[in-house]
Image 1 (cartoon, helix red, strand yellow):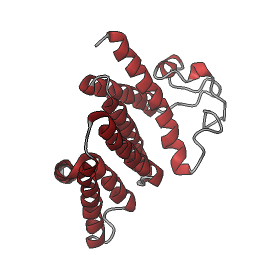
Image 2: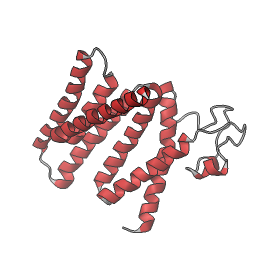
Image 3: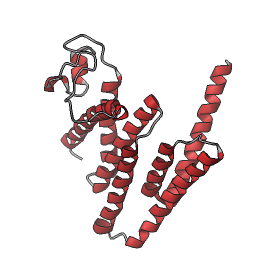
Image 4: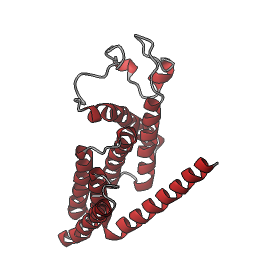
Length: 222
């Protein structure tokens, strides 16, 4: 694959990462993601185009607002870089295919979900719906572009019911240990992956969660 395509893909991913920073900041606050334009949350200075170049603007400004000098969170360039590498990794994995577009869209939404959940312990319904819609569009494209029979939709539907249903069961049994956002997200991912891959996803999720819990307990004991 030509180098310029890889560089272009990374740049697009970094630009999407810059937009995701806006989504992560504004959506939990129920603010518009389009208005007002990007600005410093401290002094309200409206950012210029040259203030919004992913990663480079942060370095040039030395991590501070051009107008008031307030420190800019290091998270912003990190998210931009991570998004860029996710786009590049997906391209190198799937090539110039429609699956690449599907998975970079999914990964972008999941990155926003992870950050919002980390900050506020919520998963907005709109983002969960975005995952499901991208998964549905992906299935439809597979029907028209790859000849997948419509009857194959049974697998993703069962995956949705399995993922969402299992997390709903856990939420009921544990009296709310799983939030509504987690249930909807797992249902959407279940549609994306189908039954068998959803089972694997659930297994690895609980395994990783268990290992992290043991690690945190061990660190606390020490």
